[in-house]
Image (cartoon, rainbow over all chains, first blue to last red; front, top):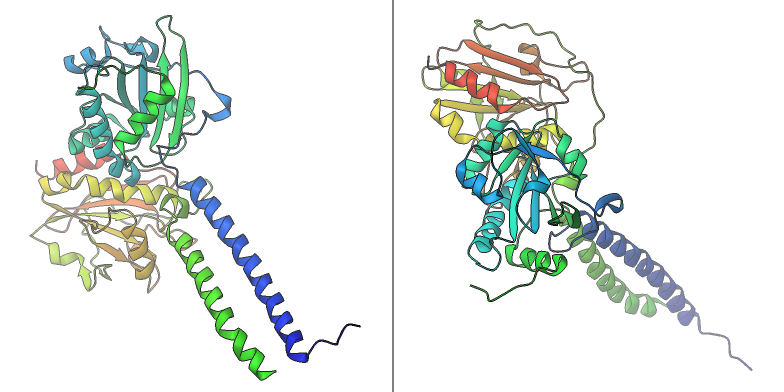
Length: 218
Length: 206
């Protein structure tokens, strides 16, 4: 025969029920917050797949740089426009930026680190090139950004946003990694929006995802 | 009975405190971009400009985010002044415009100009908003002023107060004599290119 519970025990059970209910609510809130955080603050070291299942890099055109050093870096010649697939590199990193964007401003020193690291390694400097596309920026604004941060890789204005739209980059900065094959075909293997805060990790991801073979580090 | 209640309360409190703490951490980590209020395309312009190039700039005094008040005429004979009215804090185009001017400080310095950023928002709102535009520990190099009360009084004086109580996206360049030398009441949906402002500033010295 079961004994009748003591009134104090019933209160304890009622309180435990309330506590359990509150805990479930709080856990749920915590999980939702956590999910929002991880999906909205994206680290460029955690790549996401290309948008809309894109596996190739949209072929856009940009003006051939007038600067001899930049021409040489990209391996392009002449004047007028050239296609992105004409850049002489197996792997291309594109940063879609905006001079006015604080996240791009904060990322700039880290992107410079990335460029200098690549240029300082003889096994990578001919295999990975970087360009920047300034969404909604005039040539004047791109030039200001370039001078302010001492950026040494080529930046191109995309004043009407048409290139950025082709690339599917709606927020800045967005980092895109693509392989450019010798037959002109491309493979986009990296697409992430968010501040760049660690150039070394970013480069490791690019190397891993692109499948570039590393030789002796310099 | 009473004993049971007292036994449970501290435990309940501890659990609540721990979990509320967790929730607060998540709330604090949301970034600038995610806090921008989405705005649909607006009527390009919704005010009637009452001033023209060559007019004397109406004087005003407004409270600044950094504390104290700023009066336009305090710069007379000392600095050229650029007034940048932007419609509202935490909205898309505005949130990108002043970080660009922050980066372009050299352009203003070179032309012996100070920039005054003005919105109809109150000081606490402007404090939070502008803080997010800079790296931790840094701040905008130019004063940000609140035209909150009497609401939009300065924007109205300059003929750039829209019917919904926010200002236009407008630039006024005022020389050291207090004369307006350049006006751009821009399409509210678009950021004015820096090139045009740079040209206007350079003309001040010609």
